[in-house]
Amino acid sequence: MSDDDIVLEISGLEVGYSTTKGEVKAVRGLDLAVRRGEILGIAGESGSGKSTLAVALLRLLKPPGKVTGGSAIFRPRGRSPVDLLKVDGEELRVLRWSALSYLPQGSMSSLNPVMRIGDQFRDVILEHAPERKSTLSELIPRLLAQVGLDTDVARMYPHELSGGMKQRVLMAICVALEPDLVIADEPTTALDVTIQRVILQSLVDLQRDFGVTLVVISHDMGVHAQLVDRVAVMYEGELVEVGDVRQVYKQPKHEYTRQLIESIPRLGRRAS
Ligand SMILES: Nc1ncnc2c1ncn2[C@@H]1O[C@H](COP(=O)(O)OP(=O)(O)OP(=O)(O)O)[C@@H](O)[C@H]1O
Image (tube, rainbow, N blue to C red; front, side):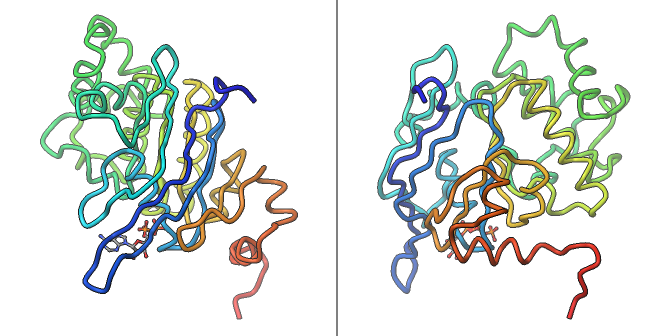
């Protein structure tokens, strides 16, 4: 596989939090290559380091968190490769949304409550791709349609939308500028089960239509089974297994992965 096929190459990533009881190592020596165009799942129970990994890559890690080692080489198309752990503020601002976008955990509250949905699209697009100004009137309805929402939604405020609709709006904003990589942290966790399925399908459609690479973080192995091409499993800050999702489900190499798979509720299996 050539460098061009790898959109993000994480090597030896170490992230810790200094606490009064000493340093908590949240990510330990993590190596992972994200392939261009794939949907990669990051699995692992709560506390295994998944969100820490995401915020470190996006440079949104807050103190007492600190990256203590490693590199994360990002190769957006048409730009030079950059180490996300070393880029400065201005470089990062340029990359955000147009090359790298993020759907954070609990993101539904990140919409501005006093701004119409259409204006929120406009803000992101104009700030990062002002040359698209003349296409906005066509682009916004197209993006909304892509996630199954009516054009009228552009005139609404966030409080007029359900949780699932808000999540779809955010997904559409994330792909609006056709970034190379989208990182989504627990994209369906706050939603009820039927809506979860629809949102996952929308994510797959968006990934295909916009040709983005998608990294999906979820503690829920059912989400990975439905959505991803490959899955990487984290346990206590380490990556214990990564592989084709069907292969990992069929023959998990690590005992911890087997336990995670076992924990997926199945229809007909009785709770005891
Ligand atoms: N601000 C913080 N201060 C100290 N320790 C932290 C902090 N944030 C996270 N940690 C620790 O880092 C480790 C990894 O946490 P992280 O939130 O990344 O895991 P996660 O797999 O994303 O879990 P969740 O899905 O619950 O967010 C845990 O041991 C957690 O207690």
